[in-house]
Image (tube, rainbow, N blue to C red; front, side, top):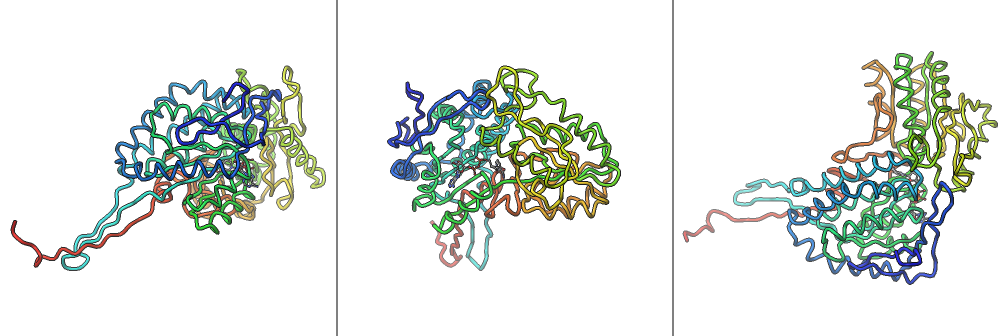
Length: 492
Ligand code: NAD
């Protein structure tokens, strides 16, 4: 950042002022303070970053994987040493609590750790004597220059679902973080710089749609990793694939949770409410729809209402705050207009239900944790991604009906069940159309060594982020057949 708080790009190992005249303000959602100005970089600047990444590629892919990961070991240490300051940056620009910010950084560190094991994961396979004197083996090589595009809600974690794996596999990359929360990646980029990573391997280009389009259209970019809303994910997938790129595009979500009559009310309520209202509901794995089975409805709707009403809203930097502001005033208005539509569905708002003012933070984008009972399973609240602290409840007669309601949703990021019954849990995990399943878990976020498996409109592509899928996504296989028959042997 320069003296006027204008964020710079990081291209070919240098912090560079953008030549774009378009900027956006980065705004603290708790008080509307302007934290910085972020450039909306243009096609030319993306071109410079791609040139830098392309020039760095040959030497980087020839660098042994065991050497490449040494930079990641250093990065992990730097993340740990700077976790407090990084978390503070996330909270300032994104609004979540410090505990939530640290939690996401912990996830970033876990991904860096898994990527440090890439030499083993990169190993190929071979078969001796596919015919007499002929062996065949497969190796993995990097795909080339990779583009990474990330959303606003996890600025410290989501870039690291991709970046460590991409570079450990021998690729170079360009990252474009969300223009709403660019400061965290600027901080992380300074840490990457301190590792001594050679120039051009990771480039940071800030911007919005024009910057993304330049990435999608650049012929030298071979793969795109994206996380954001489904509408944009679909667009990224279509345009990237039409341009011949490998694309993984994670989209939005609506995550149902089925509550069986035998679920423990106290424990389950706490877990569900933490999932629904943590990060102010702006989490792609937030429980946003509770489907109560049979007699679970009354005790659970009452318990959820009570638990929602006791959540403390406030500034994420303050202790004892459970729920921070949502990202922007527009987002707050969008969320409250969803809540208002409850009336047209004859549903009952039993907790929250409106925007609120918090003492000391009159300009904060606060929405009260909201529970809406008896929503229409086909209605707008049940089917839309609201992306705020809003939980809808649908009563169902039995587990089969509950699973049917879950599976009629268009997303497939996560499905959860709360029960003490093994057979009910087993049936649920077998039959539900979602890529991440929680059994008595509210945020079933896969650890870094598992793929982050969204389904349906929560994901466009084949290979997901993290773990073994990341290795497959960021490499291409080469199969080599070689003939060395005995008759050719000589004695040396
Ligand atoms: P978004 O789709 O608005 O933006 C994501 C990225 O795409 C940003 O970098 C943005 O600059 C860019 N972008 C936005 N509009 C674009 C356009 N028209 N053309 C090209 N690029 C564009 O998403 P957001 O509001 O930043 O993030 C919230 C969304 O992300 C939610 O839908 C949430 O569910 C989803 N999300 C999904 C996951 C997952 O793992 N599936 C994880 C986190 C967030």
